[in-house]
Image 1 (tube, one colour):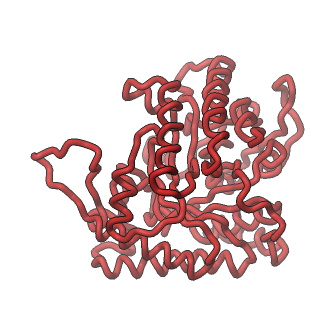
Image 2 (tube, rainbow, N blue to C red):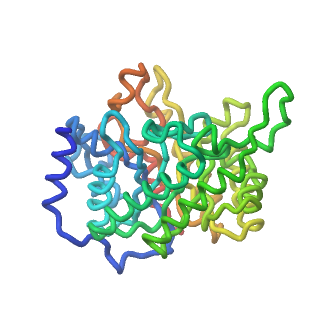
Image 3 (cartoon, helix red, strand yellow):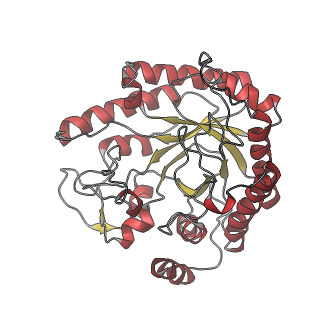
Amino acid sequence: MKKIVIILLAAAGLSSCYYHPDTPRGSFAKGADVSWLSEMEHDGVKFYEPSENGSRSPEGDCLDILQKAGANSVRLRVWVNHTTGWSNKADVVYMAKRAAKQGMRVMIDFHYSDFFADPNHQTVPAAWQDYSYEQLCEAVREHTLDVLYALKEEGVKPEWVQVGNETPKGMLWPVGRVTDLSLPHDSTAPAENHWDEYAGFTATGYKAVKEAFPDAQVIVHVDNAFMYRDWFFRAMEEHGGLFDMIGLSHYPMMSEWSGIPWEEANRRAEENIRALIQTFHKPVMIAEVGMLNWGEGAVYDSVAALSDAVMTDFMERIAPIDSCVGIFYWEPQVYSGWRPAEYIPLGWGSYNMSSFTPEGQPSPALQTMLGWEK
Protein backbone atom coordinates (compact mmCIF):
# COMPACT_ATOMS: atom_id res chain seq x y z
CA MET A 1 0.00 0.00 0.00
CA LYS A 2 2.90 2.37 0.70
CA LYS A 3 3.94 2.57 -2.94
CA ILE A 4 0.35 3.27 -4.04
CA VAL A 5 0.20 6.17 -1.60
CA ILE A 6 3.44 7.50 -3.09
CA ILE A 7 1.99 7.20 -6.57
CA LEU A 8 -1.22 8.99 -5.64
CA LEU A 9 0.63 11.79 -3.87
CA ALA A 10 2.88 12.28 -6.86
CA ALA A 11 -0.09 12.29 -9.18
CA ALA A 12 -1.85 14.92 -7.09
CA GLY A 13 0.92 17.38 -7.86
CA LEU A 14 0.20 17.34 -11.57
CA SER A 15 -2.23 19.67 -13.28
CA SER A 16 -5.86 18.65 -13.80
CA CYS A 17 -5.93 18.36 -17.59
CA TYR A 18 -3.42 16.35 -19.53
CA TYR A 19 -4.88 15.45 -22.88
CA HIS A 20 -3.58 17.82 -25.53
CA PRO A 21 -6.12 18.25 -28.36
CA ASP A 22 -3.32 19.29 -30.72
CA THR A 23 -1.41 16.04 -30.20
CA PRO A 24 -1.16 14.43 -33.67
CA ARG A 25 -3.74 11.66 -33.76
CA GLY A 26 -3.77 9.28 -36.67
CA SER A 27 -0.09 9.79 -37.50
CA PHE A 28 2.36 6.89 -37.24
CA ALA A 29 2.70 5.85 -33.59
CA LYS A 30 6.22 5.24 -32.29
CA GLY A 31 6.38 4.29 -28.68
CA ALA A 32 7.00 1.83 -25.91
CA ASP A 33 5.19 -0.24 -23.37
CA VAL A 34 6.69 1.19 -20.17
CA SER A 35 4.42 -0.51 -17.66
CA TRP A 36 7.36 -1.37 -15.40
CA LEU A 37 8.66 2.20 -15.31
CA SER A 38 6.96 3.37 -12.11
CA GLU A 39 8.22 0.28 -10.27
CA MET A 40 11.74 0.79 -11.64
CA GLU A 41 11.71 4.39 -10.44
CA HIS A 42 10.45 3.23 -7.06
CA ASP A 43 13.45 0.86 -6.93
CA GLY A 44 15.81 3.74 -7.66
CA VAL A 45 16.75 2.87 -11.25
CA LYS A 46 18.21 5.84 -13.14
CA PHE A 47 18.06 6.65 -16.84
CA TYR A 48 20.50 8.66 -18.93
CA GLU A 49 20.50 10.74 -22.08
CA PRO A 50 22.11 9.15 -25.16
CA SER A 51 25.75 9.98 -25.82
CA GLU A 52 27.75 9.62 -29.01
CA ASN A 53 30.51 7.46 -27.54
CA GLY A 54 28.35 5.46 -25.14
CA SER A 55 29.77 7.13 -22.04
CA ARG A 56 27.55 8.02 -19.07
CA SER A 57 25.62 11.20 -19.83
CA PRO A 58 23.28 13.41 -17.77
CA GLU A 59 20.50 11.67 -15.86
CA GLY A 60 16.97 12.30 -17.09
CA ASP A 61 13.34 11.28 -16.89
CA CYS A 62 12.81 8.10 -18.89
CA LEU A 63 9.73 9.44 -20.71
CA ASP A 64 11.65 12.61 -21.63
CA ILE A 65 14.53 10.51 -22.95
CA LEU A 66 12.20 8.35 -25.04
CA GLN A 67 10.38 11.40 -26.37
CA LYS A 68 13.61 13.13 -27.36
CA ALA A 69 14.55 9.96 -29.24
CA GLY A 70 11.31 10.23 -31.23
CA ALA A 71 8.64 8.45 -29.16
CA ASN A 72 5.17 9.95 -29.42
CA SER A 73 3.19 7.23 -27.60
CA VAL A 74 3.17 4.93 -24.58
CA ARG A 75 1.39 1.64 -23.88
CA LEU A 76 0.32 0.65 -20.37
CA ARG A 77 -1.03 -2.71 -19.23
CA VAL A 78 -3.81 -3.14 -16.68
CA TRP A 79 -4.07 -6.08 -14.30
CA VAL A 80 -7.19 -6.53 -12.23
CA ASN A 81 -5.55 -7.08 -8.84
CA HIS A 82 -1.95 -8.28 -8.85
CA THR A 83 -0.40 -9.03 -5.46
CA THR A 84 2.43 -6.49 -5.87
CA GLY A 85 0.07 -3.56 -6.48
CA TRP A 86 1.71 -2.53 -9.76
CA SER A 87 -0.09 -2.20 -13.12
CA ASN A 88 -3.39 -1.65 -11.34
CA LYS A 89 -5.78 1.24 -11.85
CA ALA A 90 -3.92 3.74 -9.65
CA ASP A 91 -0.56 2.94 -11.24
CA VAL A 92 -1.93 3.13 -14.78
CA VAL A 93 -3.69 6.43 -14.17
CA TYR A 94 -0.51 7.90 -12.71
CA MET A 95 1.62 6.81 -15.67
CA ALA A 96 -0.97 7.81 -18.27
CA LYS A 97 -1.21 11.30 -16.76
CA ARG A 98 2.56 11.71 -16.91
CA ALA A 99 2.69 10.65 -20.54
CA ALA A 100 -0.30 12.69 -21.63
CA LYS A 101 1.03 15.77 -19.84
CA GLN A 102 4.01 15.58 -22.21
CA GLY A 103 1.70 15.37 -25.20
CA MET A 104 2.28 11.66 -25.75
CA ARG A 105 -0.50 9.43 -27.03
CA VAL A 106 -1.72 6.60 -24.81
CA MET A 107 -2.65 2.97 -25.39
CA ILE A 108 -4.34 1.03 -22.58
CA ASP A 109 -3.84 -2.75 -22.61
CA PHE A 110 -6.45 -4.71 -20.62
CA HIS A 111 -5.23 -8.20 -19.68
CA TYR A 112 -8.41 -9.16 -17.78
CA SER A 113 -6.21 -11.14 -15.41
CA ASP A 114 -4.27 -10.59 -12.20
CA PHE A 115 -1.00 -11.34 -14.01
CA PHE A 116 0.40 -11.54 -17.54
CA ALA A 117 -2.07 -12.76 -20.15
CA ASP A 118 -0.56 -14.39 -23.24
CA PRO A 119 -1.25 -17.37 -25.54
CA ASN A 120 -0.38 -19.81 -22.74
CA HIS A 121 -1.92 -17.95 -19.81
CA GLN A 122 -5.37 -16.38 -19.72
CA THR A 123 -6.16 -16.86 -16.05
CA VAL A 124 -9.45 -15.57 -14.66
CA PRO A 125 -8.82 -12.98 -11.91
CA ALA A 126 -9.15 -14.36 -8.39
CA ALA A 127 -12.13 -12.11 -7.69
CA TRP A 128 -13.94 -13.53 -10.74
CA GLN A 129 -13.42 -17.21 -10.02
CA ASP A 130 -16.47 -19.43 -10.52
CA TYR A 131 -18.33 -16.68 -12.40
CA SER A 132 -20.75 -17.75 -15.11
CA TYR A 133 -20.35 -16.46 -18.65
CA GLU A 134 -22.89 -13.72 -17.99
CA GLN A 135 -21.15 -12.70 -14.78
CA LEU A 136 -17.77 -12.63 -16.52
CA CYS A 137 -19.20 -10.35 -19.21
CA GLU A 138 -20.44 -7.99 -16.54
CA ALA A 139 -17.06 -8.10 -14.78
CA VAL A 140 -15.30 -7.25 -18.06
CA ARG A 141 -17.65 -4.33 -18.58
CA GLU A 142 -17.32 -2.98 -15.03
CA HIS A 143 -13.52 -3.33 -14.92
CA THR A 144 -13.10 -1.65 -18.32
CA LEU A 145 -15.35 1.25 -17.40
CA ASP A 146 -13.79 1.61 -13.94
CA VAL A 147 -10.31 2.14 -15.38
CA LEU A 148 -11.37 4.24 -18.37
CA TYR A 149 -13.58 6.58 -16.34
CA ALA A 150 -10.73 7.02 -13.84
CA LEU A 151 -8.59 8.18 -16.78
CA LYS A 152 -11.39 10.39 -18.06
CA GLU A 153 -11.79 12.06 -14.68
CA GLU A 154 -8.11 13.00 -14.84
CA GLY A 155 -8.36 14.43 -18.34
CA VAL A 156 -6.56 11.55 -20.10
CA LYS A 157 -8.03 10.42 -23.41
CA PRO A 158 -6.50 7.15 -24.66
CA GLU A 159 -6.26 6.85 -28.42
CA TRP A 160 -6.20 3.04 -28.41
CA VAL A 161 -7.55 0.38 -26.05
CA GLN A 162 -6.67 -3.30 -26.22
CA VAL A 163 -9.46 -5.66 -25.20
CA GLY A 164 -7.31 -8.61 -24.16
CA ASN A 165 -3.61 -9.29 -24.57
CA GLU A 166 -2.24 -11.87 -27.04
CA THR A 167 -5.47 -13.83 -27.33
CA PRO A 168 -5.18 -16.29 -30.27
CA LYS A 169 -6.55 -18.93 -27.90
CA GLY A 170 -9.19 -16.70 -26.35
CA MET A 171 -9.27 -15.27 -22.85
CA LEU A 172 -10.78 -15.87 -19.40
CA TRP A 173 -10.16 -19.60 -19.57
CA PRO A 174 -11.85 -22.02 -19.63
CA VAL A 175 -15.08 -20.17 -20.43
CA GLY A 176 -13.57 -18.14 -23.28
CA ARG A 177 -10.94 -20.59 -24.51
CA VAL A 178 -10.75 -21.38 -28.22
CA THR A 179 -8.74 -23.84 -30.29
CA ASP A 180 -6.01 -22.68 -32.63
CA LEU A 181 -7.75 -23.42 -35.91
CA SER A 182 -4.49 -23.15 -37.87
CA LEU A 183 -3.18 -26.38 -36.34
CA PRO A 184 -4.29 -29.96 -37.10
CA HIS A 185 -6.77 -31.06 -34.48
CA ASP A 186 -5.33 -33.46 -31.93
CA SER A 187 -7.94 -36.17 -31.55
CA THR A 188 -6.61 -37.02 -28.08
CA ALA A 189 -7.41 -33.56 -26.74
CA PRO A 190 -10.86 -32.01 -26.48
CA ALA A 191 -11.53 -29.15 -28.88
CA GLU A 192 -12.25 -25.89 -27.09
CA ASN A 193 -14.18 -23.80 -29.54
CA HIS A 194 -15.91 -21.42 -27.19
CA TRP A 195 -15.97 -18.75 -29.85
CA ASP A 196 -19.36 -17.38 -28.91
CA GLU A 197 -18.13 -16.75 -25.37
CA TYR A 198 -14.75 -15.32 -26.36
CA ALA A 199 -16.24 -13.08 -29.04
CA GLY A 200 -18.86 -12.07 -26.49
CA PHE A 201 -16.19 -10.97 -24.03
CA THR A 202 -14.53 -8.95 -26.79
CA ALA A 203 -17.79 -7.33 -27.86
CA THR A 204 -18.56 -6.47 -24.23
CA GLY A 205 -15.17 -4.82 -23.79
CA TYR A 206 -15.54 -3.02 -27.11
CA LYS A 207 -18.90 -1.52 -26.12
CA ALA A 208 -17.53 -0.45 -22.73
CA VAL A 209 -14.61 1.33 -24.39
CA LYS A 210 -16.95 3.15 -26.76
CA GLU A 211 -19.19 4.15 -23.85
CA ALA A 212 -16.28 5.88 -22.14
CA PHE A 213 -14.36 7.07 -25.23
CA PRO A 214 -16.37 6.85 -28.47
CA ASP A 215 -13.35 7.85 -30.58
CA ALA A 216 -10.90 5.34 -29.10
CA GLN A 217 -9.70 2.60 -31.44
CA VAL A 218 -10.32 -0.87 -29.99
CA ILE A 219 -7.58 -3.41 -30.69
CA VAL A 220 -7.73 -7.20 -30.67
CA HIS A 221 -4.17 -8.45 -30.21
CA VAL A 222 -2.44 -11.72 -31.12
CA ASP A 223 1.16 -12.87 -30.99
CA ASN A 224 3.66 -13.90 -33.67
CA ALA A 225 3.22 -11.50 -36.57
CA PHE A 226 5.16 -13.97 -38.71
CA MET A 227 2.22 -16.44 -38.45
CA TYR A 228 -0.80 -15.69 -40.64
CA ARG A 229 -3.99 -15.76 -38.61
CA ASP A 230 -6.76 -15.01 -41.03
CA TRP A 231 -8.70 -17.86 -39.39
CA PHE A 232 -8.62 -16.03 -36.05
CA PHE A 233 -10.03 -12.70 -37.19
CA ARG A 234 -12.50 -14.40 -39.52
CA ALA A 235 -13.84 -16.47 -36.61
CA MET A 236 -13.93 -13.36 -34.43
CA GLU A 237 -16.15 -11.57 -36.94
CA GLU A 238 -18.34 -14.62 -37.61
CA HIS A 239 -19.11 -14.97 -33.89
CA GLY A 240 -19.93 -11.33 -33.28
CA GLY A 241 -16.63 -10.03 -31.97
CA LEU A 242 -16.03 -6.31 -32.43
CA PHE A 243 -12.74 -4.53 -33.08
CA ASP A 244 -11.42 -1.50 -34.99
CA MET A 245 -7.78 -2.48 -35.35
CA ILE A 246 -5.59 -5.58 -35.48
CA GLY A 247 -2.74 -5.74 -32.97
CA LEU A 248 0.31 -7.96 -33.50
CA SER A 249 3.39 -8.87 -31.47
CA HIS A 250 6.68 -9.42 -33.28
CA TYR A 251 9.73 -10.96 -31.60
CA PRO A 252 11.96 -12.10 -34.48
CA MET A 253 14.30 -14.12 -32.25
CA MET A 254 11.38 -16.25 -31.08
CA SER A 255 10.86 -17.46 -34.64
CA GLU A 256 14.37 -18.93 -34.54
CA TRP A 257 13.21 -21.34 -31.84
CA SER A 258 11.01 -22.79 -34.58
CA GLY A 259 13.84 -22.82 -37.09
CA ILE A 260 12.82 -19.61 -38.88
CA PRO A 261 15.69 -17.11 -39.30
CA TRP A 262 14.94 -13.55 -38.29
CA GLU A 263 15.18 -12.35 -41.90
CA GLU A 264 12.43 -14.78 -42.88
CA ALA A 265 10.37 -13.85 -39.81
CA ASN A 266 10.49 -10.18 -40.80
CA ARG A 267 9.57 -11.04 -44.40
CA ARG A 268 6.62 -13.16 -43.28
CA ALA A 269 5.48 -10.47 -40.86
CA GLU A 270 5.41 -7.91 -43.66
CA GLU A 271 3.49 -10.32 -45.89
CA ASN A 272 0.98 -11.09 -43.13
CA ILE A 273 0.43 -7.43 -42.26
CA ARG A 274 -0.38 -6.62 -45.87
CA ALA A 275 -2.68 -9.65 -46.18
CA LEU A 276 -4.59 -8.88 -42.97
CA ILE A 277 -5.16 -5.28 -44.05
CA GLN A 278 -6.39 -6.39 -47.46
CA THR A 279 -8.62 -9.15 -46.08
CA PHE A 280 -10.23 -7.39 -43.13
CA HIS A 281 -9.96 -3.73 -44.20
CA LYS A 282 -8.66 -2.70 -40.81
CA PRO A 283 -5.38 -1.01 -39.82
CA VAL A 284 -2.63 -3.00 -38.11
CA MET A 285 -0.68 -1.91 -35.04
CA ILE A 286 2.58 -3.59 -34.00
CA ALA A 287 1.55 -3.53 -30.34
CA GLU A 288 4.74 -5.23 -29.17
CA VAL A 289 8.18 -5.65 -30.68
CA GLY A 290 11.38 -6.94 -29.12
CA MET A 291 14.77 -7.69 -30.54
CA LEU A 292 17.44 -10.22 -29.70
CA ASN A 293 17.71 -12.44 -26.66
CA TRP A 294 20.80 -11.31 -24.77
CA GLY A 295 21.45 -14.65 -23.12
CA GLU A 296 24.28 -15.38 -20.69
CA GLY A 297 27.72 -14.20 -21.73
CA ALA A 298 26.46 -12.10 -24.62
CA VAL A 299 28.85 -9.39 -25.81
CA TYR A 300 26.90 -6.15 -25.83
CA ASP A 301 28.46 -4.55 -28.92
CA SER A 302 27.80 -7.56 -31.16
CA VAL A 303 24.28 -8.10 -29.86
CA ALA A 304 23.45 -4.39 -30.18
CA ALA A 305 24.68 -4.25 -33.76
CA LEU A 306 22.68 -7.30 -34.79
CA SER A 307 19.60 -6.00 -32.96
CA ASP A 308 19.86 -2.73 -34.86
CA ALA A 309 20.15 -4.63 -38.15
CA VAL A 310 17.00 -6.62 -37.33
CA MET A 311 15.08 -3.46 -36.41
CA THR A 312 16.28 -1.57 -39.48
CA ASP A 313 15.15 -4.39 -41.73
CA PHE A 314 11.76 -4.57 -40.03
CA MET A 315 11.15 -0.82 -40.18
CA GLU A 316 12.12 -0.74 -43.86
CA ARG A 317 9.45 -3.38 -44.48
CA ILE A 318 6.54 -1.93 -42.51
CA ALA A 319 7.05 1.82 -43.02
CA PRO A 320 5.76 1.78 -46.63
CA ILE A 321 2.50 0.07 -45.56
CA ASP A 322 -0.06 2.87 -45.31
CA SER A 323 -2.41 1.03 -42.94
CA CYS A 324 0.33 -0.19 -40.62
CA VAL A 325 -0.21 2.60 -38.13
CA GLY A 326 2.43 2.22 -35.46
CA ILE A 327 4.90 0.22 -33.40
CA PHE A 328 5.58 -0.16 -29.66
CA TYR A 329 8.74 -1.64 -28.14
CA TRP A 330 7.93 -3.82 -25.13
CA GLU A 331 9.62 -2.58 -21.94
CA PRO A 332 12.77 -1.20 -23.62
CA GLN A 333 13.91 0.65 -20.50
CA VAL A 334 15.03 -2.44 -18.55
CA TYR A 335 18.80 -2.75 -18.10
CA SER A 336 21.54 -4.04 -15.77
CA GLY A 337 19.58 -7.06 -14.56
CA TRP A 338 16.64 -5.24 -12.95
CA ARG A 339 13.70 -7.53 -12.16
CA PRO A 340 10.11 -6.64 -11.23
CA ALA A 341 8.88 -7.78 -7.83
CA GLU A 342 6.65 -10.48 -9.30
CA TYR A 343 9.65 -12.22 -10.94
CA ILE A 344 11.58 -12.77 -7.72
CA PRO A 345 9.37 -15.40 -5.98
CA LEU A 346 8.97 -17.14 -9.34
CA GLY A 347 12.74 -17.43 -9.73
CA TRP A 348 12.65 -15.68 -13.11
CA GLY A 349 15.65 -13.85 -14.47
CA SER A 350 15.73 -10.32 -15.81
CA TYR A 351 13.89 -9.52 -19.03
CA ASN A 352 16.54 -9.90 -21.74
CA MET A 353 14.87 -8.45 -24.83
CA SER A 354 14.97 -4.85 -23.65
CA SER A 355 16.61 -2.02 -25.58
CA PHE A 356 18.63 0.16 -23.23
CA THR A 357 22.41 -0.04 -23.02
CA PRO A 358 24.30 -1.21 -19.90
CA GLU A 359 24.81 2.53 -19.21
CA GLY A 360 21.04 3.12 -19.03
CA GLN A 361 20.67 4.83 -22.43
CA PRO A 362 18.47 4.01 -25.46
CA SER A 363 20.21 1.42 -27.63
CA PRO A 364 20.92 1.90 -31.35
CA ALA A 365 18.01 -0.40 -32.25
CA LEU A 366 15.57 1.63 -30.14
CA GLN A 367 16.88 4.90 -31.55
CA THR A 368 16.46 3.48 -35.05
CA MET A 369 12.83 2.58 -34.35
CA LEU A 370 11.90 5.82 -32.61
CA GLY A 371 13.78 8.02 -35.06
CA TRP A 372 12.20 6.47 -38.15
CA GLU A 373 10.39 8.91 -40.41
CA LYS A 374 7.33 7.53 -42.16
